[in-house]
Amino acid sequence: MRLTSGLCVVLLTVTGFSSFQTQASEKDELALVMRQLDQVQAGLDRARVVANQNDQDARFYFDYLSATRDISTMKQGISRYLEPSRAQPSVPMSVTGQYRGEDAR
Image (cartoon, rainbow, N blue to C red):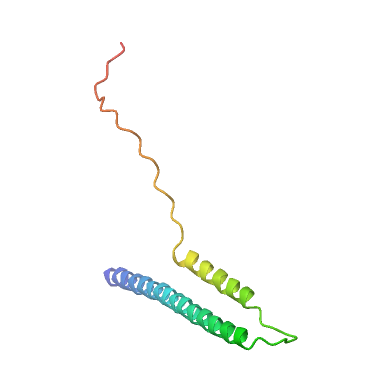
C-alpha cells in the first residue's frame, strides 16, 4: 500500500511537470511568433519603400496598410494571451484603531 501511494505521488509530480513544460513551450513558441511577426512587418516596410520607388501605374497593388493592421491585431491578441489582465486587488477595509467595546447590558 505504501509503495502504491508513493508511486501515485511520483506519477502526479511527473504529470504536473510535463504539463508545466507544455505551457512553457507554448509561451516560447508564441514569443517566437511575435518575433517573426516583427520580421514580417520589417519586410513589408522594405517592400513598401521599393514599391513607392518604382511607382508605376499598376492595375494591382499590395495593400500594405491592411497587412500592417492584420499583423498588429495578431500581435495584440498574442500579447493579451501571454499577459492577461489581472484582477486589481480589492480596497482593504480601513483600520479604525478602536478595539475597546462596551457591554450594553
